Length: 225
Image 1 (cartoon, rainbow, N blue to C red):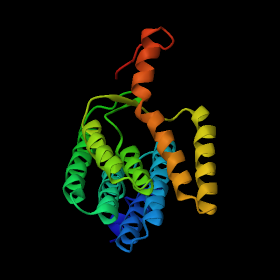
Image 2: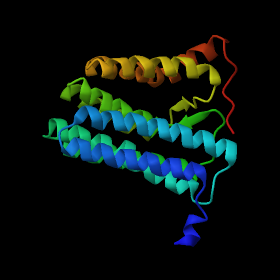
Image 3: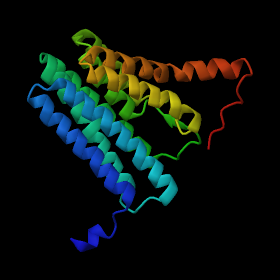
Image 4: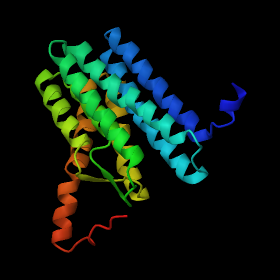
């Protein structure tokens, strides 16, 4: 036991926290506490961002990539799929299985592919998972179904999505989090979910916006590494 503990680094601990939040989300969804379940998925995405930041600053341990991917499968693959099924039932067990399979493929490809400077290949699974979770709180089974299918295909696509590491994005992200937190405190879950949902729509359409800006010469051409 002590041998494996010596391999764990601080980013790995945060990744395990990510997985624990995903596990908690599944438990809450099984009890019908859908708002808490979705909130835990959002918090798991925050933990996923923190562990990435720490890994870049402190270095990644020998288990880091595997722990991170396994945690992401639970928090952004299994948890959102289970939440959608628990909330709406019906065919969502099939949609959830398809969504989970595409999420696993997305993470496996990420682990074995050369990394590209400044971009991901396909929709990152944390964004997809939070997208699905927010749609459940908007109480629209059709919206959730459409999102699960579209997120599934986007995750395994080759569409480039930007890595959000520029410090200038932190203020708007904090603003979104603050408004969502206020909505939660006031009991307006649709407001909280709507704010997060709209922010993710912005990220969803970012490849199109970036490509249009490049064609107009407002951004340099994409550099692939």
